[in-house]
Amino acid sequence: MQDKKQQLISIYDGFETAAAEYKREAACHKGCAFCCSDAGSIDMTTLEGLVIRNQIDTLPRPRRIAVKKSLLADMRRREQKKASACPFLMKNRSCLIYAVRPFACRRIYSVTVCSASQHPMLSQKVMALGQQTIRMLQQLDDNGYSGHLSYILHMLDTPAFLKAYLAGEYHPETVMAFGKTHGIVINRVMTSRQPQ
Ligand code: SF4
View 1 (spheres, rainbow, N blue to C red):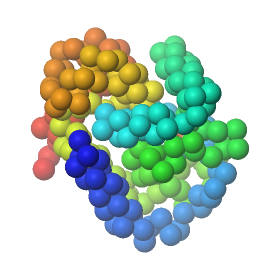
View 2 (view 1 turned 60 degrees about the horizontal axis):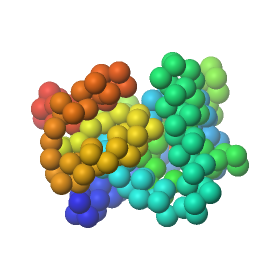
View 3 (view 1 turned 30 degrees about the vertical axis):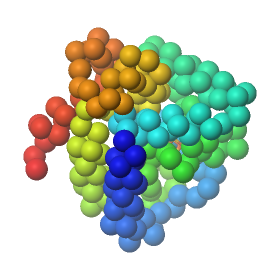
């Protein structure tokens, strides 16, 4: 698993290097959290979830409890099809897990300032690069799943799931019911369907 975590960082770094010339034009700045507060599905793989989970475990207990509550509230709001800001967005509009944020957050930037009527505008090349990178992340996490961050973290908080996942086992039938109702996809199925 440690090796996979290193490969995850290499994939992130590869994307940043390839996208750097486009991101130079970005209007994004610290404190602008439009993407985080008006957040659609913030998808990630289980491997990314594991890294975030480990980061949450390093937080002081009161903070950890608050994060778990926010994650649960986000899950409940989304289950009711209600809008929900990212549970990691802090009051000062910065990201609690910035160093380990998922690829969904790394791939987005905008050359114009975002607003309710102006969604992020980015290069088609970076969009395509993002899709390729998602495929690489799903290939790397080949006994895992992808979906919105609070749903994936909920799965990892389920002891039987975590044990099997860490052992490298692949039992998609065990997550079928939750997966169907929460838009979870199976990485192995996604990468076998997409063109090489
Ligand atoms: S994880 Fe961080 S960067 Fe990503 S949407 Fe949440 S607050 Fe924003």
